[in-house]
Structures are given as C-alpha cells and as structure tokens.
Amino acid sequence: TTMARWVIQVSEKFAPLYAALKEHLLQQVVVQADETPLNVLKEEKKCYMWLYCSG
Image 1 (tube, rainbow, N blue to C red):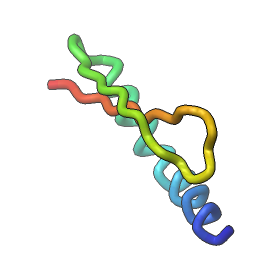
Image 2 (image 1 turned 90 degrees about the vertical axis):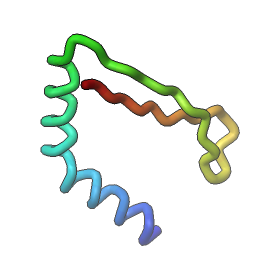
Image 3 (image 1 turned 45 degrees about the vertical axis):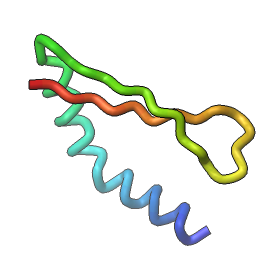
C-alpha cells in the first residue's frame, strides 16, 4: 500500500539518525527503557514499542 511504502521510505531516510542516536545511547552510563504493548492492524501476536532515554 501507499502508506506502507511511505513508512519504508521514511525509515530509510532516518537510518543515519537512528544509528547516531543508538551509538550515543550505548555510550551512556545509565539508560532507561520502557516496553509498551502496541496494537497493530490485524496482527494476532503481541507487538511492543521500546523507548529509551538517558541523561
């Protein structure tokens, strides 16, 4: 679908930013994480979103 294609294209554009943020996060002394259940259209299995922060 068009929306799925958009998500893929955006994720490709943001890949360098993701890599930089991940590298920065892994250098921190303390990292906080949150795992939140997420409903995804027509998915029968459980889905999650993980959020991380530091500083």
